[in-house]
Amino acid sequence: MCTRSIKTWSTPVSAEESRLIPCILCGGEALRPYLACEGFAYRRCARCGLVQMNPQPLASEVARRYQEGHGAAYLAYELANEQAFLELQTLALGDAGFAALERDLFAKGQKTLLDVGCATGALLETLSRRGWETTGVEICTPAQVYAQRVRNLDVRALPLKENHFPCHSFAVVLASHLIEHLNDPRAFVREVHRILLPGGCFLVTTPNIGGFQARLFKNRWRSAIFDHLFLFSIKTLSRLLGDCGFEVVRVCTWGGLAAGSAPAGLKRLCDRGAKRFGFGDVMLIKARRCGGEML
Ligand SMILES: [Zn+2]
Image (cartoon, rainbow, N blue to C red; front, side, top):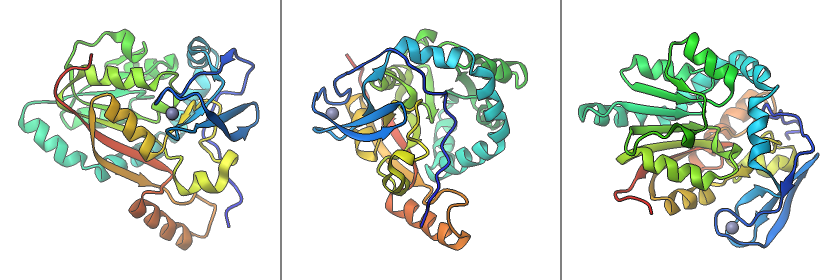
């Protein structure tokens, strides 16, 4: 039925230093080959099912990908797709009940929102016009400079943790297509927990390896790329969030078939089914920060 898959933008595969690591979700060391791609491979933890690039590139090498050389290409990619990405993000937030969340929080005077990996800041600009007090984090320097100078937004260039935001700084944290790029997603989720207000909301969007397209395309799946170190399912991401002090309150998935891969009618049908039954290509998990501090 579908024979082609267009991969997401990625840095070229390079010979970076990498090492085998235990599963970051359960500590398991039985990691079975799962997807063999050109120049890299994913393994699946036999115990918890987390799919991870393993051996894994060192954090210093990963940081360099975004800070050297490819920054201008990434900005060009983001600018070329800005409107389409903004529409997708807006639809996703709509499905996740963002309007009701906004009403509730604004009624309490809680308007602080952080977008981690905010790219050119298109979504932040929209939200700031709606009354949110916005902050962004974007480690790709050309994109960060663009968001700051062209859009006049408060966007920080350092990785999340290095900004040392005070505890309970934000009512909402967004992270769209970010968590799969990180060496240590657990440390990231814990930091989000620390900087959120008690009861605050974390909306995390990432490719869904449990989706229809991932199962169909396997190593040709558009999200099986060099830059994606972890490929989460609803189950593995929910477990990570639960481990770090969050309660999952809503899961949405969308995207049944890639654009252009099937006749429009079939694609529409498949998209509707994917959304309804949770096998869409991308997922958004809305999680509430439980009370109490993490150790
Ligand atoms: Zn595991």
